Length: 382
Image 1 (cartoon, helix red, strand yellow):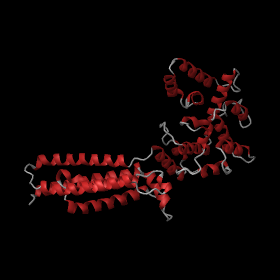
Image 2 (spheres, helix red, strand yellow; image 1 turned 60 degrees about the horizontal axis):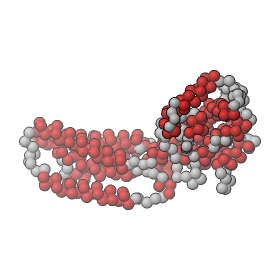
Image 3 (cartoon, one colour; image 1 turned 90 degrees about the horizontal axis):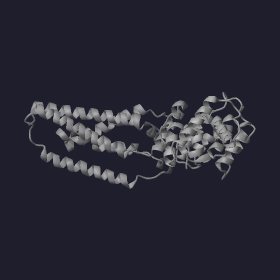
Image 4 (cartoon, helix red, strand yellow; image 1 turned 180 degrees about the horizontal axis):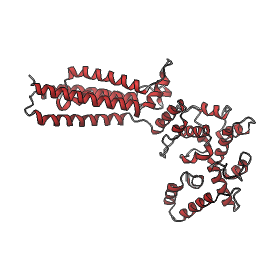
């Protein structure tokens, strides 16, 4: 028979473990993995109810708690091992949040998850069987045991939660695409533009999604090169059959025309810009496409038809950088007067001369000038 103090201790441990798991589960679903779960909901839901991350997280957490406590009536994890009762629920959290591009291709459950599930069941059942035959002695010093038992359970939960986070990891780019989708869906383009802005990793879908955001906000010529660009003009458009929430259709609707079968990105963008009724963003797409493909001379000839190149105040930043670079490479004067930009360009050139080794020069110039068109034109992809 347990003493009253032992009973209170076990109840305290059970409440603490349940509370810690509930906090983790709710936070994990409502904040950390909310964009992925929302995307999965929108892909699979047939009703008209809007996804609510807080309600979803609360409901799933309550269900997992009830199931865990019910299973533990038979498994009887207690004392230092109370936390093991939450192993299946935590791994289930990892499973339902491990969402990737397979959601668009209808990929079945990977064999790795079948193996993980089998391993978790085996660990759970074996541990329950073994511990029921080991933990039969009464606790002699309840005061000392309290801290030891609580801390060991918290350590076990930390390990289990770490495994949950590791197993639920998805492609970084896809998660950023889901976060952008989340903000665009709510019309918050400013926050969408900030998603993953410090990361140097970018898929074509993510790159095209960012270009769409900037074009929507009229900032394509101002901020395009503040993000990594690895795909040239092709990076302005998502792949036709892309497995991403950032669909190509949203770009076509913004630009104003549909692409033709087999049409290359540059050809499509040039045709869109040449349309009489083309929106300003279509023209910016065309100018940026030339910059991305390093068609500097063609850009210098074309931009004058869309912007007053003599007025530095109205020219987007990257267009000024490109025109200044073009004039320097050709030994001409820039069409506008911008002493501050000229000074910054000279600093860029001076910094280049400080490093003879190509890789060091590329890295150090990127730290200070990686968001300029100058750095992209001279170093990106080289």
